[in-house]
Amino acid sequence: MHRDELARHLDELLEVARIRDYCPNGLQVEGRPEVARIVTGVTASVALIDRAAAAGADALLVHHGYFWKGEDPRLVGPRKRRIERLLAAGLSLYAYHLPLDLHPELGNNAQLAARLGLATEGRAGEQELVAYGALDAPTDLAGFAGRVKARLGREPLAIGEPGRPVARAAWCTGAAQGFFETAIALGVDVYVTGEISEQHVHLARESGVAFVAAGHHATERFGVQALGEHLARTFGLAHAFVDIDNPV
Image (cartoon, rainbow, N blue to C red):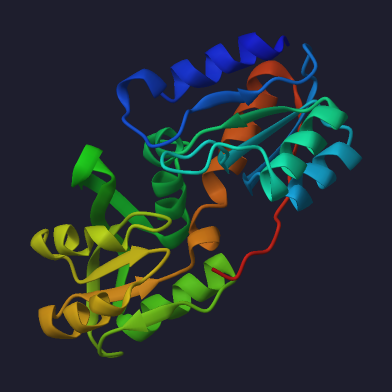
């Protein structure tokens, strides 16, 4: 399919026009006009670009692209090398940040819920980025942390009493520790996100709501995979997900 047709489909599917973000969503760098093979990944690093080029991809689809608000716009150093590699390989770069977090089926929050056995009942907070609902099988904090480790392949940081009952959760993938107070106000037993800051340790201890930091990268691998699989089913594109490990 044509590069621009793919951009239009993704923009409409993910409702880009209605979502406020601090980076441009959609086609960020133009490559060759026709797209038959696509590689997906979390972040458009040099390592991912090189893997996509080696795989013969025409396009790279990621959650974390380029041109963030407040970032130095000059194409120098690592930024120059990334763009240089994309252009040399003829790769188009598509990036979807908050729109990919929010999609009710393909989004990061929805895909994380499916893997952790969480039933989405509603959404709250800024742009309704925080999802909440019940666990399919209530457990305690130690058991829930074990579930996260088994299903995400990463040891989470769990703040709270290990034996605390966990039946209801709120969650938001990535660096969403700033929504912890939103989760507390929802009356859940645990909040799950990617990262944690110093003050949230104390807030978890004092509020009685447990905090599970499951990894920024680890919680945001699944939306872009689901989106790539959607494109493969819908348009017959060849698709491969490439996971560039990141401990954060």
